[in-house]
Length: 108
Image (cartoon, rainbow, N blue to C red; front, side, top):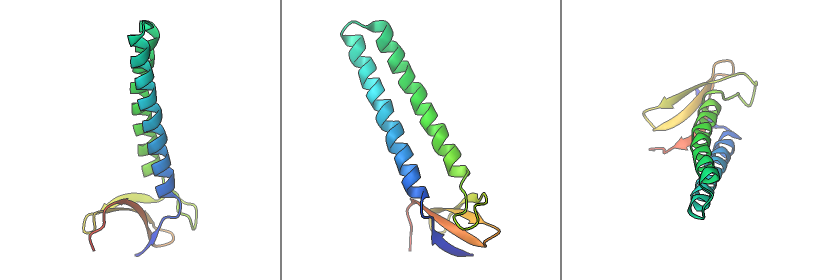
């Protein structure tokens, strides 16, 4: 199979990771700050919500990682690891292409 770089996945995955981590850390910091200044109920609720945001971010990235569409034909691909090169690929059986997701490191 021919290997090509996936044109959009790396940006989508990185953006989802950054936004999820940023909002989770911000809400945890805000919750701790609110608890320290005397708003215990709100502070603990916001801190608890940050934990759910971490779980939600993980679920979103997992779903996005295993539901990748082929840029050429639009059909769902099969995500797998290429252990020889330590990289993640999305294989499209219709186009006979492997899409390099640019996640992990390559040994060449």
